[in-house]
Length: 114
Image (cartoon, rainbow, N blue to C red; front, side):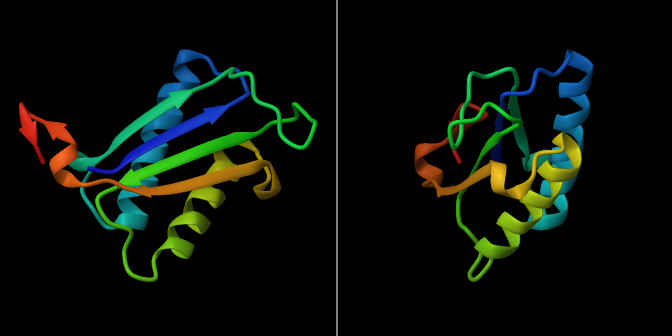
């Protein structure tokens, strides 16, 4: 179950956050080639974030998944970065993207581990 968390210092309305989550889910389905039923997206907007001494628009994005596809980290990061630039108008040099692998046995869903 991929989990995408987007933190940004931009303040989004509930409607804007909902659109962002829906669009992010679609993007994950494309880059991971998985159905929506597996995707979880969390958006935290209006965060107190500073990068390089500036509070200009910034995004910290974390993608947790059971396994990063072999040789796929570059593709994932590029796809996420392109999405963030279009969706939030945050330039790639104002983004940090972190990929993390998690053990299925350490992640619960539907009353038990995955």
